Amino acid sequence: EEKSKIEKAVNRHHFKYFYLKNLWLGSNGIYSKNYFFNLAKSLAKEKISPDEKIRKINRDLKRIKKEKEKLFKELKISKKYKDLFSVYSNFMLTKIYRRYAQIFWAYQMKNLLKETGKRLGLKLDEARYMMLGEIKEGLLNSEIDKEDIKKRLDFCFYYIEKNKEFISTDKNHFVLTQLKSTKQEDVKELKGQVGCLGKAKGIVKIVNTQQEIAKMKSCPKALLPPSAAQFGE
Image 1: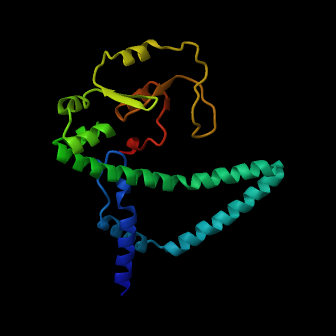
Image 2: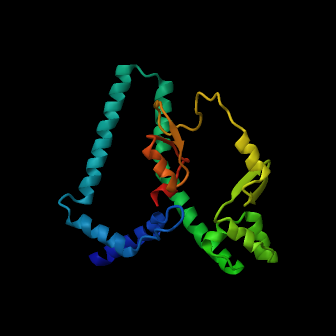
Image 3: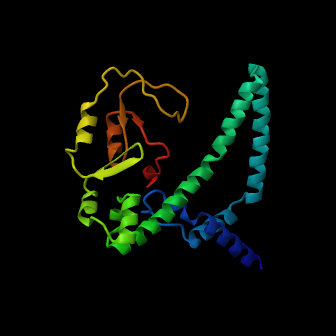
């Protein structure tokens, strides 16, 4: 009976979290039930039980809360900023759930695109480069430019403005030419969403792919896309 309870608990856990290994492109696959069974076995062998670990975490949280309240008093933090800290900390607690939702979306989209590619005679990687309108036309009306889609794997750019979008494989497209010729020489400050408060000086490299991480050898600072799950693959 105890074995059956553990098996049911692991099955529930697997059903809830099996996709987390998938990440962005899905090249890592998914977690098997055996993976979670082995984790459970490892926990059972540890000297400190999971229940005791949870109790310790709860004790630590209570202690940290008291220390924080004491620090607020010492620094004379007003209610307005206390509320701000509270809102921000609660927001950060949701980050893991937002990431889970993002990875689950990527996992489901992989299956959807795989089936789309199967019906249109395309590989998964090729189907990834299709726009929504192209998928619709392909599935409903069998209208699809396979040759152009296949070219996109070597090079393409996606452009959208005022709800109008397109993908092009033309390296000399006027949009690219216009963007390349537009330079701002007098930029003194980089602006964007702040992931962590702080200050840094020096040369900055923009890193969009795993291959571009090599840029970091000559520069210790990088600008990464927000929630860049692909860097975990």
